[in-house]
Length: 271
Picture: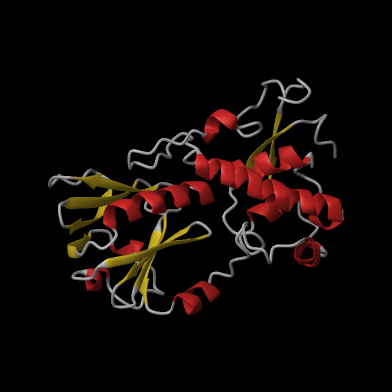
């Protein structure tokens, strides 16, 4: 699943290609992609001009000249493809639109992604119960301490809960905990102030570096926009089962935490 750095990269590339361009026509071929909270139909975007591009957690937000917004959550495998000439839809193309000299296709192999066309962004995101952005100054040790004080779940699972810190997925959770030297199964309520501070600091470091390098390309995810993620070269935990730890050379271990594959170093991240 694309996480915060991948969504940020996609947002930046789409802004470069679509800003101030007007949608001439738009077509949705798989109706369930439009969620029930959508105030308008996809077709209502026809004739509107792209003005603003935002990201909220893992959500892409396109703002238009009439005040409407189009929100897209890529989920597992949502991808945008841009073409300079009219191109036949692929097997998993579910939405297409045209702006000026660019044809845009939206593909999703599993059809898990969701989108909505709305007027009130704040009201929409209140229903999503999202936590702070990792770069928000309000994200503090005291905030996490209060949120985690009754959380007996493993810290790996809690980091994946978007209601605390939004944008972190499986790949970056492993990387953050490795750099913090925290065992992924450690109950969240037992974390010290120093460990919480380390989580905040390393979350910012890991995600900023991943954004700078265009995100992480793992298995099925690519930006599909001429951008190749290079952060996978820097991964120290995720996907490194059986390989030597970059810090102590101990063989990296893979376990399941909350049903999610998790790789860590048993020596560096002692329980």
